[in-house]
Image (tube, rainbow, N blue to C red; front, side, top):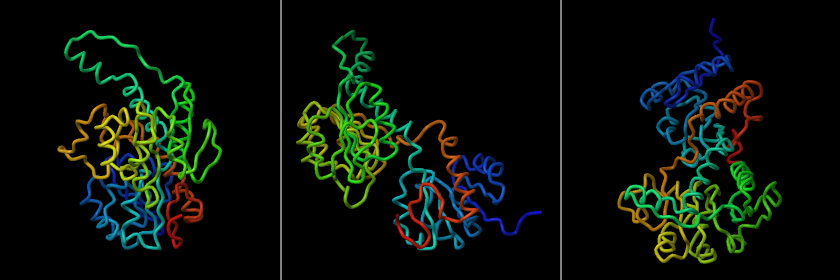
Length: 324
């Protein structure tokens, strides 16, 4: 007999059925509704106390339709769009999957560093032209990477950089000592942190204080042989200044996964900027993401059933307390 007190969990995802099946086994004290598309989710929203889904798929009309909503769990790190919704009032808790994307984001950084360092696009062009051309291959060994923003993803990236024999510097106002980081600078000392780097990796969350924090003055402080890799939030980078720095050769190149406006417009000149690698905001994606996200979600559902929002992992906003 169905427990009339079961909370209803609406799952909005292309893999919603998989999540529902796995969660029914792991956390049977809930009722699960799987919604593959937005219209189905919208129809079921009035029944939901809990909504789960990738943040870009959780629209304001969907949240507004969930009159009984108590908790939103985003299957992403970024939740800027959800925090901006008036419908996510003081009675709604918000959690995310922050920290789960370390492996895939680190691998994307290495994909970009290796490509830029060895000029792999030139190799591909030579292959298409059937041209046999050899040049000395630069190594990541003994290179310096400055990571701006030190969370769990940065920790995992730093471990991998150390394994490659790189020196790792960090930029953070909240942490002063982290394993694998040789030195950590404050944000106000960002220019000093990038002065000797070979790569600047942007991993900062976005808010008013990090808007365009990577700007013309930062590019001017970097060696002309250095490259920017931006994989967290597009608005952390002044894209006009980046285009100019690339055009003039002030920096050697860039690997860009995120942009202020997405998708990147086909006419944007950065598509054809020299020595640039562009990927379509795939840094957090992986072929095993469901398996990565499921334990966090199951643990949170278990904790929520036992004690409400107090013990949830990835807490961004708690019922009644605002953003944490």
